[in-house]
Image 1: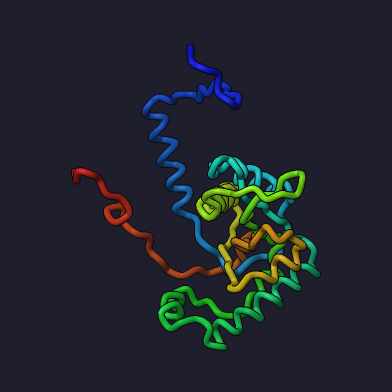
Image 2: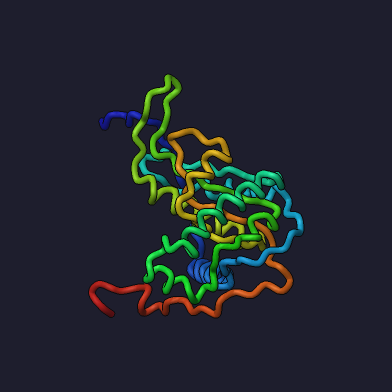
Length: 228
Protein backbone atom coordinates (compact mmCIF):
# COMPACT_ATOMS: atom_id res chain seq x y z
CA UNK A 1 0.00 0.00 0.00
CA UNK A 2 1.38 3.42 -0.94
CA UNK A 3 2.47 5.65 1.89
CA UNK A 4 0.28 8.63 2.68
CA UNK A 5 1.65 11.91 1.28
CA UNK A 6 3.44 14.20 3.72
CA UNK A 7 0.87 16.93 3.11
CA UNK A 8 -2.91 16.51 2.95
CA UNK A 9 -4.66 16.24 -0.39
CA UNK A 10 -8.34 16.87 -1.13
CA UNK A 11 -10.52 15.67 -4.01
CA UNK A 12 -10.67 17.89 -7.10
CA UNK A 13 -13.74 17.42 -9.27
CA UNK A 14 -14.35 20.52 -11.39
CA UNK A 15 -17.47 20.53 -13.54
CA UNK A 16 -16.77 19.02 -16.94
CA UNK A 17 -18.60 21.13 -19.50
CA UNK A 18 -20.10 19.95 -22.79
CA UNK A 19 -17.88 20.90 -25.70
CA UNK A 20 -20.27 23.53 -27.13
CA UNK A 21 -20.41 25.26 -23.74
CA UNK A 22 -16.61 25.13 -23.43
CA UNK A 23 -16.22 26.84 -26.78
CA UNK A 24 -18.96 29.38 -26.08
CA UNK A 25 -17.33 30.42 -22.82
CA UNK A 26 -13.89 30.50 -24.40
CA UNK A 27 -15.03 32.71 -27.28
CA UNK A 28 -16.85 35.11 -24.97
CA UNK A 29 -13.89 35.36 -22.64
CA UNK A 30 -11.41 35.93 -25.48
CA UNK A 31 -13.69 38.59 -26.96
CA UNK A 32 -13.97 40.31 -23.57
CA UNK A 33 -10.21 40.42 -23.12
CA UNK A 34 -9.70 41.63 -26.68
CA UNK A 35 -11.49 44.83 -25.59
CA UNK A 36 -8.95 45.49 -22.83
CA UNK A 37 -6.57 48.40 -23.28
CA UNK A 38 -4.00 50.09 -21.07
CA UNK A 39 -5.28 53.53 -20.09
CA UNK A 40 -3.40 56.73 -19.22
CA UNK A 41 -6.38 59.10 -19.07
CA UNK A 42 -8.62 58.35 -16.10
CA UNK A 43 -11.79 59.68 -14.56
CA UNK A 44 -11.80 60.65 -10.91
CA UNK A 45 -15.15 58.95 -10.39
CA UNK A 46 -15.18 56.78 -7.27
CA UNK A 47 -14.81 53.00 -7.52
CA UNK A 48 -16.09 50.76 -4.71
CA UNK A 49 -13.29 49.41 -2.57
CA UNK A 50 -15.00 46.02 -2.81
CA UNK A 51 -13.99 45.89 -6.50
CA UNK A 52 -10.32 46.20 -5.54
CA UNK A 53 -10.73 43.49 -2.92
CA UNK A 54 -12.33 41.16 -5.46
CA UNK A 55 -9.54 41.77 -7.99
CA UNK A 56 -6.91 40.97 -5.37
CA UNK A 57 -8.87 37.88 -4.34
CA UNK A 58 -8.80 36.72 -7.96
CA UNK A 59 -5.06 37.45 -8.21
CA UNK A 60 -4.49 35.50 -5.01
CA UNK A 61 -5.71 32.33 -6.74
CA UNK A 62 -2.73 32.41 -9.14
CA UNK A 63 -0.37 29.43 -9.26
CA UNK A 64 3.02 30.04 -7.71
CA UNK A 65 6.32 28.27 -7.21
CA UNK A 66 5.92 25.75 -4.36
CA UNK A 67 2.63 27.56 -3.53
CA UNK A 68 4.56 30.27 -1.69
CA UNK A 69 2.45 33.10 -3.16
CA UNK A 70 5.28 35.64 -3.04
CA UNK A 71 3.16 38.77 -3.54
CA UNK A 72 1.60 41.59 -1.55
CA UNK A 73 -0.96 43.95 -3.12
CA UNK A 74 -0.85 47.31 -1.34
CA UNK A 75 -3.95 49.48 -1.82
CA UNK A 76 -3.65 53.28 -1.70
CA UNK A 77 -6.70 55.54 -1.69
CA UNK A 78 -5.45 58.42 0.45
CA UNK A 79 -5.03 61.60 -1.66
CA UNK A 80 -1.88 62.74 0.15
CA UNK A 81 -0.19 59.38 -0.37
CA UNK A 82 -1.20 59.32 -4.04
CA UNK A 83 0.31 62.80 -4.41
CA UNK A 84 3.59 61.64 -2.84
CA UNK A 85 3.69 58.64 -5.19
CA UNK A 86 3.04 60.84 -8.22
CA UNK A 87 5.76 63.32 -7.27
CA UNK A 88 8.31 60.56 -6.66
CA UNK A 89 7.39 58.70 -9.85
CA UNK A 90 7.60 61.85 -11.96
CA UNK A 91 10.99 62.72 -10.47
CA UNK A 92 12.35 59.36 -11.65
CA UNK A 93 10.60 59.62 -15.00
CA UNK A 94 12.08 63.06 -15.68
CA UNK A 95 15.53 61.51 -15.30
CA UNK A 96 14.44 58.76 -17.69
CA UNK A 97 12.90 60.94 -20.38
CA UNK A 98 14.59 64.33 -20.05
CA UNK A 99 17.77 63.23 -18.29
CA UNK A 100 18.77 60.62 -20.85
CA UNK A 101 18.59 57.55 -18.64
CA UNK A 102 16.43 55.72 -21.21
CA UNK A 103 18.59 54.32 -24.02
CA UNK A 104 17.65 55.31 -27.59
CA UNK A 105 16.20 51.90 -28.47
CA UNK A 106 13.89 52.00 -25.47
CA UNK A 107 12.73 55.53 -26.29
CA UNK A 108 12.02 54.45 -29.86
CA UNK A 109 9.98 51.48 -28.65
CA UNK A 110 7.93 53.74 -26.35
CA UNK A 111 7.32 56.44 -28.96
CA UNK A 112 4.09 54.90 -30.40
CA UNK A 113 2.57 54.92 -26.91
CA UNK A 114 2.98 58.68 -26.46
CA UNK A 115 4.35 58.33 -22.93
CA UNK A 116 6.27 61.00 -21.05
CA UNK A 117 7.36 62.01 -17.58
CA UNK A 118 4.04 63.59 -16.50
CA UNK A 119 1.80 61.12 -14.65
CA UNK A 120 -1.28 63.09 -13.49
CA UNK A 121 -3.38 59.92 -13.48
CA UNK A 122 -1.54 58.76 -10.36
CA UNK A 123 -3.54 61.38 -8.47
CA UNK A 124 -6.69 61.34 -10.59
CA UNK A 125 -7.59 57.69 -10.10
CA UNK A 126 -9.52 56.67 -6.99
CA UNK A 127 -7.11 53.83 -6.26
CA UNK A 128 -3.46 52.95 -6.69
CA UNK A 129 -2.52 49.32 -6.14
CA UNK A 130 1.16 48.46 -5.84
CA UNK A 131 2.12 44.82 -6.23
CA UNK A 132 5.25 43.94 -4.28
CA UNK A 133 7.24 40.79 -4.98
CA UNK A 134 8.60 38.98 -1.95
CA UNK A 135 12.26 38.25 -2.69
CA UNK A 136 12.26 35.81 0.21
CA UNK A 137 9.78 34.77 2.86
CA UNK A 138 10.10 35.40 6.58
CA UNK A 139 9.23 32.62 9.02
CA UNK A 140 7.50 33.36 12.35
CA UNK A 141 10.89 33.12 14.11
CA UNK A 142 12.35 35.77 11.79
CA UNK A 143 14.52 33.46 9.68
CA UNK A 144 14.48 33.67 5.91
CA UNK A 145 12.69 31.21 3.66
CA UNK A 146 13.73 30.93 0.03
CA UNK A 147 10.99 31.72 -2.48
CA UNK A 148 10.99 30.02 -5.88
CA UNK A 149 10.04 31.42 -9.29
CA UNK A 150 9.20 34.80 -7.79
CA UNK A 151 9.05 36.80 -11.03
CA UNK A 152 6.99 34.16 -12.82
CA UNK A 153 4.59 33.75 -9.90
CA UNK A 154 4.05 37.46 -9.33
CA UNK A 155 3.69 38.09 -13.06
CA UNK A 156 0.88 35.53 -13.31
CA UNK A 157 -0.87 37.03 -10.28
CA UNK A 158 -0.66 40.51 -11.80
CA UNK A 159 -2.11 39.23 -15.06
CA UNK A 160 -5.05 37.77 -13.19
CA UNK A 161 -5.49 41.05 -11.29
CA UNK A 162 -5.67 42.96 -14.59
CA UNK A 163 -8.16 40.45 -15.99
CA UNK A 164 -10.39 40.72 -12.93
CA UNK A 165 -10.43 44.51 -13.17
CA UNK A 166 -11.36 44.41 -16.84
CA UNK A 167 -14.11 41.87 -16.15
CA UNK A 168 -15.65 44.39 -13.71
CA UNK A 169 -15.49 47.21 -16.28
CA UNK A 170 -12.45 48.93 -14.77
CA UNK A 171 -9.23 50.02 -16.43
CA UNK A 172 -5.61 50.08 -15.36
CA UNK A 173 -2.05 50.50 -16.54
CA UNK A 174 1.06 48.44 -15.81
CA UNK A 175 3.16 51.39 -14.66
CA UNK A 176 6.76 50.54 -13.80
CA UNK A 177 8.71 53.73 -13.07
CA UNK A 178 12.37 52.77 -12.94
CA UNK A 179 13.80 52.69 -10.32
CA UNK A 180 10.82 52.05 -8.05
CA UNK A 181 12.45 51.88 -4.62
CA UNK A 182 10.56 55.00 -3.53
CA UNK A 183 7.39 52.89 -3.39
CA UNK A 184 8.84 50.73 -0.62
CA UNK A 185 9.37 53.75 1.60
CA UNK A 186 6.08 55.47 0.87
CA UNK A 187 4.11 52.24 1.34
CA UNK A 188 6.12 51.19 4.42
CA UNK A 189 7.02 47.76 3.09
CA UNK A 190 9.61 45.42 4.69
CA UNK A 191 13.04 44.80 3.14
CA UNK A 192 12.11 41.37 1.74
CA UNK A 193 9.66 43.02 -0.69
CA UNK A 194 10.43 44.95 -3.86
CA UNK A 195 7.99 46.96 -5.99
CA UNK A 196 6.89 45.01 -9.05
CA UNK A 197 4.08 46.98 -10.75
CA UNK A 198 2.17 50.14 -9.86
CA UNK A 199 -1.47 49.90 -11.00
CA UNK A 200 -3.65 53.01 -11.25
CA UNK A 201 -7.23 51.72 -11.12
CA UNK A 202 -10.39 53.51 -12.19
CA UNK A 203 -12.69 54.33 -15.07
CA UNK A 204 -11.33 55.79 -18.31
CA UNK A 205 -11.92 59.53 -18.69
CA UNK A 206 -14.94 60.35 -20.88
CA UNK A 207 -12.58 61.67 -23.58
CA UNK A 208 -9.87 59.03 -23.06
CA UNK A 209 -7.88 57.95 -26.08
CA UNK A 210 -5.49 55.02 -26.49
CA UNK A 211 -2.83 54.29 -29.12
CA UNK A 212 -4.16 52.62 -32.27
CA UNK A 213 -2.29 49.36 -31.78
CA UNK A 214 -2.82 45.93 -33.29
CA UNK A 215 -2.24 42.71 -31.43
CA UNK A 216 0.01 39.98 -32.75
CA UNK A 217 -1.93 37.67 -35.13
CA UNK A 218 -2.55 34.12 -34.01
CA UNK A 219 -0.17 32.62 -36.57
CA UNK A 220 2.62 34.55 -34.83
CA UNK A 221 1.40 34.01 -31.30
CA UNK A 222 1.02 30.23 -31.59
CA UNK A 223 2.85 27.37 -33.24
CA UNK A 224 2.18 23.64 -33.58
CA UNK A 225 4.73 20.85 -33.36
CA UNK A 226 4.69 19.20 -35.81
CA UNK A 227 3.23 22.00 -37.99
CA UNK A 228 -0.36 21.50 -39.09
